[in-house]
Length: 171
Image (cartoon, rainbow, N blue to C red; front, side):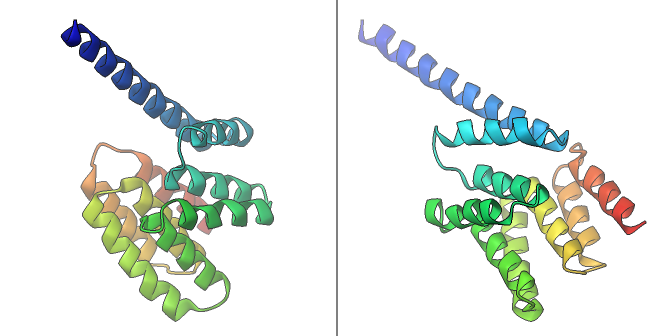
């Protein structure tokens, strides 16, 4: 009887994890497709299951895209509260430094975050770092960061898609 109960408990737990991961993947897919309202709702509902730095970062990014600075700042600030050791916390600090004109400290901190992302093999974080580099005017650094991301996961199209988006912005 205990074996059956423990197997059922394990299966329930495994199902909950897979549903949670699927919801997060769906939210990320909506964000990629620029379905910001639906992505925002999906990330917010995913946050109810637990604060995750990536969800908070993506919500901040959505609000930034929608030009809602106060809401973006709110979600970016929540990252440090939910997970102070997250590399996304460091990335938000870099963004704040760069936005205040402190490029020397910003790029120094960005190198540290970049090293964390490479060691963690976090392709999504590297893509975000590349975007921050481009927005800060680092004309060579953003492509190097995307190259690092593509080396980590050669089958992932996201670094190539972001490179295309940046090249399109460059004209």
